[in-house]
Image (cartoon, rainbow, N blue to C red; front, side):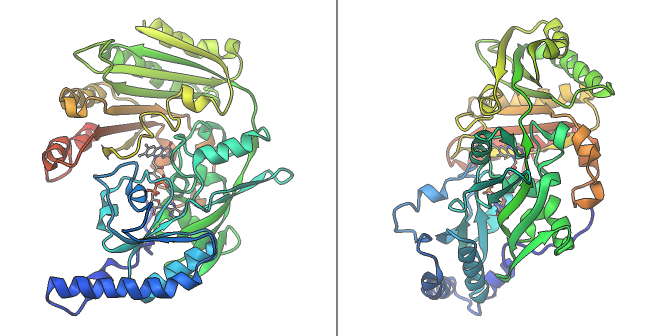
Length: 456
Ligand SMILES: Cc1cc2nc3c(=O)[nH]c(=O)nc-3n(C[C@H](O)[C@H](O)[C@H](O)COP(=O)(O)OP(=O)(O)OC[C@H]3O[C@@H](n4cnc5c(N)ncnc54)[C@H](O)[C@@H]3O)c2cc1C
């Protein structure tokens, strides 16, 4: 990644540590007073629809649940449900004034462990900034900073339009976009960030600015790839496109021994200069006991936007690899594709309140020997019933649109635009037992077993 200066959306955590007391009790009491004073100042500044929630209030527990909790559980002193951009500005200003760290929350599916470093902070919940306004003539949409993928997708679908968002319905539009944004549409239109026209952002000092290629262009560049660190996006303008046609999807289930065969087919498709931009390939290694009680199986989803006749040649090599089963879906519209490809709100991926430990790597091609070694580690870990429904994603969304975009216009690392394959093991388990977390990680220093899987 190109070097950049981190202006954290969290105020410097050092400020939390800077209380001039030695006793922990006195520190906590000072902290509570600080929070209390901050709330008193903030409350009258908030809009009518904003809600300030403290730990004894109804709704507190629900707003602690993340896609990845309890493993990722930032420690909040108060939650502000912002209803306007001004609410975000005022909350950040008060947080700055009282040296209180803060964290923006939209889809709750961020899973980096550093989120746990938030102590006694403000949660700035953006879910009330949930709107999608289409400008049909301009082919743009203005989307609120807390809007989820499925909300924007549904609102634009009503006009036969689509925007490039993330893939999973449960993630926000802003979250994936600020870090890149892989999706079904990337081969045609680039990453989500390539489709950003402008963003309204509240900086760490509470100042609201607009960033675009003309206004604050440095900030605009930084938002596109390193965006979670530069401010809170309250609204963004994205390109939109006409929906071209429906999809045909085949969901193949292979036994584990077909891993190499299938990945070689994917490598061949990637080398094909005529690979269409409307072909998406998603693999999931996971345990399906009624297919194979001993080993993980390999689910492979091939999606093609176009007619069954056009799609058929792309399904054929996978059919020839002798799947155990094939589910065929024809004439799938752009709303339903997310259920069919197992990324809808009710999918396993979108479950909330489960521990998740993941890692990821972008790869130039599938090295089948390394993939087998990685899957062997995954098989060993998931043989333990606590982790049995974990998944190892082997995805390939197509890269033509991504490579066509101007790489220098974003802060995203160059290899993200070159490497078509994503290896992404995700270990899920339930509960709060430390032993379960330790065993999921496998070792304490120098990474975890999921890191081992992606470095294979
Ligand atoms: C189940 C699951 C599915 C995923 N699916 C996809 C996918 O399909 N495509 C893809 O590219 N990635 C995907 N990811 C990765 C995902 O894009 C990132 O984890 C993303 O940061 C999640 O954003 P969120 O708003 O859902 O989560 P949150 O936890 O609410 O936010 C994550 C981070 O973004 C910051 N943030 C949120 N909203 C804003 C905002 N408006 N302005 C500034 N900062 C903000 C938060 O402060 C936090 O640091 C997935 C991850 C998981 C766990």
